[in-house]
Image (cartoon, rainbow, N blue to C red; front, top):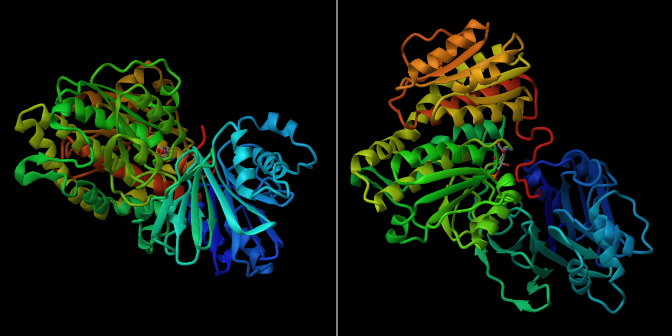
Length: 606
Ligand code: M6R
């Protein structure tokens, strides 16, 4: 979704801003813009519909040496993608970039007089409001504070003024903002990746905080203008991690790096020699863990599916546990009841998803313990939970989530092990998971090395279909849902996931020559039942692509066999096959694999 960058210092702001915006491209956007100010207050505003490359061609024709500026990538909410709707927005001396949504913008618009609106955005209303409060005796930070006090909604804003060219004012309510502190320069960004390479020191703004940034100083205050002391933290992401490293797409890189990212997830947490697992950071004593009777797992999209899959593992590990898995955008508005002794696992790659964050806050408000299962270090969810586990999958740049899913499932399974240990559950059940987790990275590594070319070929056959059904039983059901999501996101083939047993309850009516069916079949106690489902699809002329770990005969149009020693965690390996399938189909179709149309990496608005 939208991205913010800002710079104040002695270097050329234009190039730092466009470089920062390029780093934020992965978040998904449809237009981009920057404004820079010279010391005497001349503003250069450049905006373009489309990619940051369009904006860069404008900056090369209008190059300025200005050392102050703000920039933005916009993902349209109010008003179509266009140059006029792109940020920064201007009103009088004030320029602003904004992430989030101003809910009362219509009311505010009626109150602001004397400004001729040029865009359809809520952000321009905020610019006009600030400008209306910014008389000659008022400082920019005071006008911004007063305006934000009148505002209902969410925002991360960066504001500059042609009258006060030595400062950037930033504020946050519900949309992340990070201030990078360098030597004699300050950068602001909505995402740490825009700061990498410039500084490793950062101040994470909290909701309700505003900062006045000059090249040498950052002054924090609350919305009542009371000073707050700033905590400077280390940014731990390195430059390598956010580059393609020779791959054609970030997505392929992220699929391929799953063995190593998973090793980071497991490192020091799964100890096979001692038959145990351990998670630091939960902030729960063994006694507290022992009393947990109910786990609610919350997430959106792939994070939700990771929760669905992990729930099977948790309920197998801990008998007296009840588990529910909830889609955050629904759960936040339900009259839900969480029993005593509940724990909430809040799952999010970005740690910024608005619906997931809203659930977290509501659950916390009710006094229930919240644990994060988060990838992005320092993100809002990671900061607001009572405890939790970083999944350590490293930056995930491609919009479609792949390596985060694998690491989220692994991290939640380790949580299940920890819970089981605390409850004194026998070693035998635990050991099976511990042993499989320990070898999972090697198994995925082997499958990636041997199966990529095969999937490339298989993709040629199925790229021409208009629709797909993904079917699986038991732990392969959530994997089927995730497979369908991945395919639809990046290939734009309409795809649905179903439990194989549900076929006869409706989806079987869909089968015709426009469809292909991905059937996930594991050689376990449900094998024969899965084969019955396959027979039913075949009998109706289906085009089945079976992904299976059996070496027995499987009667399908195409069979992709994986050779694995895994049983409990084999679904994670099958999911890797689905990731490769979706990737190669999207490439064949010539789609923008890393930034699929209409999607955003981090969904920070409802
Ligand atoms: O950052 P989060 O894990 O909270 O994001 C949740 C979903 O928006 C995300 O998984 C989305 O569904 C992906 N595009 C899936 O590939």
